[in-house]
Structure formats: C-alpha cells, structure tokens
Amino acid sequence: MALRSEIVNVFIENTKIIYDYTIFQIKHPSFTNIYYCVLLAYVFCFTLEVILPKQRQHGLLNRKGFWLDTFYVFFNDVVIYIVGLFGLCAVAELLFMKVVGLFGFHTLKVVDITNWNPFLQIGIMFIIQDFCEFWAHYLLHRFDFLWAFHKIHHAQETLGAGSTRRFHFVEMFVFKPIIYIPFAMIGYSATDYFLFQITVQNVWGFFTHTNIKVKWGFLNYIFNTPETHSWHHAKNIPRHYGVNYASILNVWDLMFGYFYLPIDKQPILGVPDQKQMPTTFLKQIIYPFKLIYSGKYKSENNSQSHQKNKT
Image (cartoon, rainbow, N blue to C red):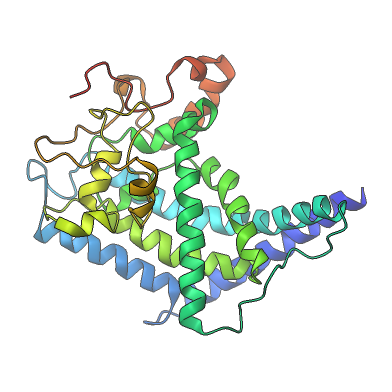
C-alpha cells in the first residue's frame, strides 16, 4: 500500500507540473515559448508543402488523411502530455530505483551533467535520445505485440508534416518512460526530458514526414530526411521488418545495416492489408486491442514489408 501511495503521489505531482507549465505557455505566446516554436515549425513544414509539393495529384488540404493527421497532432502533443505521459516517466524512475535499491544502489544518478557547458549538455542528450529512439522504433517493428500498435502509423497512403503524430498513444506510454531512465542517470528531471523531447524529436518528425520534392543528396547518409523516411513507410521494400528506423541520425541505420535508399524506384506507402485498416480516430485507437484480444496480431508477420515481391 505504501508503494502504491508513493506511485500515485509521484504521478500526480509530475503531471501537475507539466499541466501547469502547458497552461502557462499557452496563455503567454512568444517567440521563446516552446509550444509556439513547435507550432511555428509545423507551419514552416506545411508551407514547404505548399511551395515544393512532392505529390501534386491532390490539394494540400485534400490530402487523404490530412484532417485526421491534424487531430493526432493535437491529441498526442497536447492531450497525452497533459494527462500524464511524463508523470509516468517519473513513476518509471521511482520503480527503477526500487529495483536497483534491492542491490544496494540508492541513487539513479551516475553523473550530473546539468552544470556542464550547455552545448555539451545538448549534444549528449541528443545522442542518447536519438540512439534510444532508434532501438525503440526497431522493437516496434520486430515484435508482433508492439507492431499491432505501430501499424496505425504505417497505414498511411500519403504523408504530410502532421503524419508524424498519427500513432497510437500506447507507443508513448511504453517507450517514453523507459527512454527517460538514461536522462535521469545524468541528472535530468522528467520535466527536463519533456522539454527536450517536445522540441527536438517532435520538430524533426514534422520535417521527415513533409511532402516535399527535394533531393537531399549526401545529407541522406547523415540525417533522416523526407526522402529516406518515405522508404521507411513503404511496403515495396526487401527487408522483412522494415528499413530506415532512425529518428534524426541515419548513422544508426548505416551502422546496423538497415539503411535503404534505392535510386531506380519509388516507395509505395501503406501496409499490405490496407483495406482492413480503420480510417477514423476512435476505430484506430481500438483496432490494436481488437487484434491482440483475437490473437490475430500473431499471424500478421508484424511488418509493412512482408510482401513476396522484393522489387
């Protein structure tokens, strides 16, 4: 009972911190306001789609899934954060400490870098975040249970800036608290992690899903771009569990052999059983649970890339 009470108190305390911060930021717009900076980044990517569209067969607002993507941006970037995502990060830290405490360790902090040079701090946080996101993304494709949720993100036949946020909230609840642990080990709070997460990862996600016709050349081998990430969403790829898992740095895909960028064909987006995928928000939220309950997720081959045609 004592542990349960402690978990509840930690969750409520940290959720309230994020809630109060969010409400304050929304009420005080400025160019230094993180929320409005993220909004401006989305508007910038949206503007690029107007100027340099890759797919011209549909109007920008008429892109299939545009309005659903827009709703997901609000739901995942505002609602899920406020209702307790980073409260769960603090709970994960608490439980992790309870476990390591059994082995005589009484602090999660290995080294405190919060007083180091700010640029060095950002560099270290960036590498940790990007490396952890890469492996989390890989696991979402590799295991049937996780793919049942991640499949929602891949069941998109067109991409736009907002498409980055069309994913099941369970993904965030599973991985974000775990990824926070390394941040806690170098001295950061759940709130610090929240601020870093919502800026760096979210802003770059808008960019990689942007529908723009630009050839990025050698930059494709350094950064995840709309050109490389479109192949991550393709179903006409040779790897069973997918390709190009990187969030920002493609070095991870190159290092572990998952990089894929053919020059003689175009990606076909979506999943093989596209017709079975629901097209409304509530049905998409329920869909993975129905798959898991029925046991059908085990026979799906958990990948968008399980076509026999390896062209």
